[in-house]
Length: 251
Image 1 (cartoon, one colour):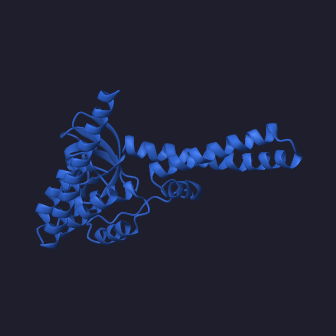
Image 2 (tube, one colour):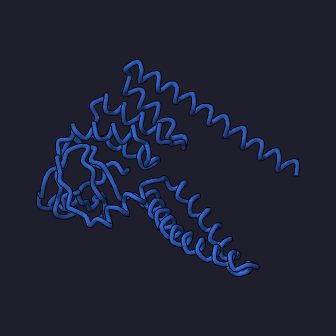
Image 3 (cartoon, helix red, strand yellow):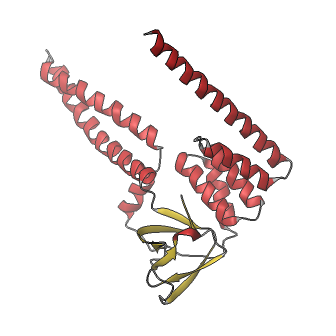
């Protein structure tokens, strides 16, 4: 038992030291940014990521540093990652809109059905952790209301249990669907950003494929299947093609 407690203490102390080190690096990177040493700031922020720590604020700072370093593609990538970590990060969204003004590719999206657009907006309201907690709470409320309906001694309790159960069931379905959607975005990322100054989109996963069109850094796109070093992509105006994976950064 003592040995187990000792191991736990060692893990906690070690984690604390690593966290303190990462926090120190974060302050150091922020100081470098304030001094105008943006490339060095990005490298220091990257050290924190390499240690396994990430946050919306960390990606936000990296995005700002990249933009000040004239790396528009990386600025879009990091700000998108900040919003992925925290969909409600208003300042990151504001900065992303500002950075987008400097993109060379001005694309118009294909109109979506209202319901589909609404569902995407709804699913992006909270992070994966928040949606997971909401789903758990609603499931507990659903179970309690079910118990009230089955074992309630009075008709009022049974009716309350029934109506609360129906409402909590509907809300749970929406929240659970949003949780699945958020989990998929984290574990199976499908969005990416062009990082190379310019890339030629091919008709097939080969250099011998027909040149379809050109994309420039910072352009956001949806990725699909991969074949070797190539990946199939789709942009918001509906056009599809193939790009080398190394030219993209996955959000």
